[in-house]
Image 1 (cartoon, rainbow, N blue to C red):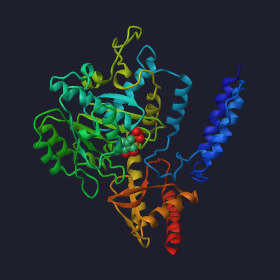
Image 2: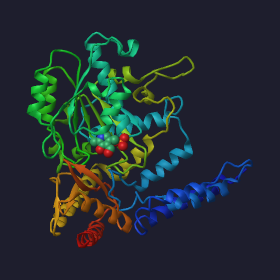
Image 3: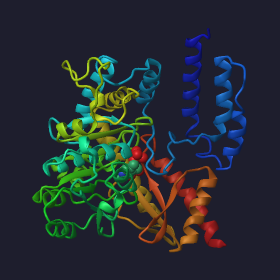
Image 4: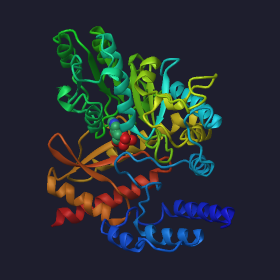
Length: 464
Ligand SMILES: Cc1ncc(COP(=O)(O)O)c(C=O)c1O
């Protein structure tokens, strides 16, 4: 029998080492490293291998292919870092190996999701009594929120979708911004509503839904089951829909409002940015992530619902052998998520919130926004560089020489430099470098160092 304590101590030391190197080494390996990793992983052996050797081999094989996502100069997608307590709690979660099904499978996991879920709702300014599900991320949270919506709007129309399915059901109309996140469409596919259910409403130059157009669209609809998707935090610009007007327009016709706030919902946690998501509390369901701005390790997302009965109706299930379900004082976490068996994600979230406190979360949001503004303010001083968005949150879009190819070339050169990593996107028909400041360890020096890499790359590209 292997010495488990030694194995875990060694694994924790390797994690700490990886984290310590994240600020020092190249931010990302070259994409072709995947070939090296694949071959180093080897082939299936006939014989068993000692656990310590397994870990040695695993680390040796994959290390060259690890990306420094926990490091301070990773600005890709919307990838948060991972706070120390949350990381350690996540390692404990693995070691404890608790199925977060109900209070029988793990009283601790059930209680921690209830407590941490309440803290999250409070921080985000959601109404008292909202239900919460701990899911894998924004995609799953959108799917669950829209499943609750589907239940409620069809129940109002006299249709039991959980029992009868969608064949023959009254059509469900989904009204959403042309700038909705792509995961909304995938959720609609998974829920059988289909992407053709969407009526897309135009967005403005920042990516906010055109609320007068939304109101006109809604007012012109004949009565029927309707879901409106609004957004807090456009994935490119960070802009937030006008939730006050959008929610009011939707509720005027009895529609369900789902807010996709994968990262932007966190604007609510700071007085400095709260105004961007004013009206949030009036919605019916909300999706957000822990692994983005809250800097909880992957994977971690949350769905909240102002109609817990609809949430449960869409998600819960039971079976005769599943004792302890729906009984007792502690809610069953599995009633609010699509999985049956599931990792106990609440421990890491509880740890992040305990480590930060209310003030720490607010400060994290404000600091990332200030660093994003620093990116924008300094980038415009570079000749030929334009900032394409109003930097209202943690997202910045840069364009070089007003040219698609030059912009892509700068992005590629910065990625190759290893100094920083930012991705590329297309914003309103134009290629842009996309910067997301989502890591709690990023400092002003990191922004300046990344900007130096950007200006060096741009100078070289411009010279060609
Ligand atoms: C607005 C928005 N919604 C949903 C998602 C999907 O979140 P996840 O990748 O955690 O599933 C993202 C991811 O960036 C997002 O920005």
